[in-house]
Image (cartoon, rainbow, N blue to C red; front, side, top):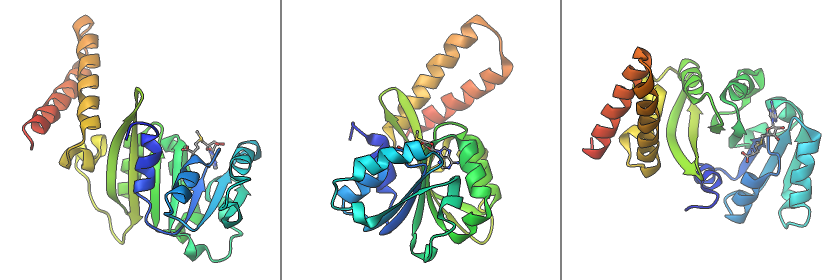
Amino acid sequence: MTKDKRIKTICNMVFTPVVAEIGADHGYITKELFEQNKITNAFLTDISSKCLQKALTNFKNSSYNQNCTFLVGDGLQALSQVENKQNIGQIIIAGMGGLEIIKILKDEQANFYNQFVLQPQRNVVELRQFLQDNNYFICSDRMVKEGKIYYNVLKVKKVDKQVLLTQDEILFGKSNLVEFNPDFVDYLKFEIAKLTEILSKKDMPEKLTYLKQLQNILTNKTKGV
Ligand SMILES: C[S@@+](CC[C@H](N)C(=O)[O-])C[C@H]1O[C@@H](n2cnc3c(N)ncnc32)[C@H](O)[C@@H]1O
């Protein structure tokens, strides 16, 4: 799994036949889900009609085009007029900032849905904190490296009460800590090398504490803890 690792990891977390992709742009994730026969129907939305046009063009000659609904709108508001929202088993929000994802999840429209797949481009720590504080259980939280970029892909569901995360789980994602994930080990090594280089030139106590934390996790990983 080298090419499109990010998209494949997202698709691996989808297990319901009807999904909505918020911020679909070209719709590559939804397209892959149809090609894997994982879904029967999809809603593709985007805040920008110009971006959604790319998905329309991309899907035009496909057999599954008739099973897709294309909607322009901000976040989950795009689905507000959809009847039978309960058929949408999972909401996918990928390729945008973590703070934008938080904004989308704060919308009252989020109350209609229970299961989400989230892939923030940045601010994943803030997103994990938000999810914990708002009764979302993080079922899976995996880092994946594609090219030189590390992505985090989270499968989450709503629960009745808070499931508290440790500080390490908020910072690094639980699955990365408890499962073997070579991309996460690669990330730790990359961050350690970067911080060691910075600290060789300047004293920065906060960064030194973080470096030690990373080294500890890497030691535990290589010991198989
Ligand atoms: C980089 S693309 C990601 C496309 C696709 N989801 C993926 O991960 O491959 C981000 C898309 O999100 C859209 N977007 C950003 N904020 C949004 C919002 N609040 N509601 C809907 N779409 C949004 C942008 O217009 C853009 O098309």
